[in-house]
Length: 68
Ligand SMILES: [Zn+2]
Image (tube, rainbow, N blue to C red):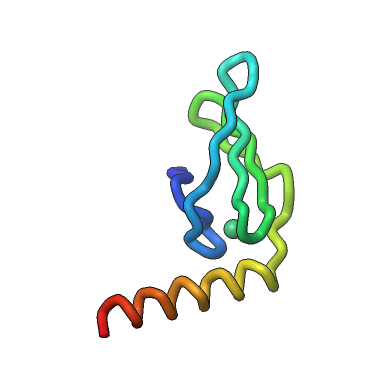
């Protein structure tokens, strides 16, 4: 599992260093959070589906404007 972008809304994910070699990954758009240890990723907070849908449609809008 490669978590550079949120799987729900494609927002770039923030990574925060935990102690002990773990990372806390969080999406600023939908609020989903994951804990990563070695190569294991575990979701610890459910995304806000509505916020994810809004962020996704905004990203689509930006893309369509950029290609226009
Ligand atoms: Zn997200």
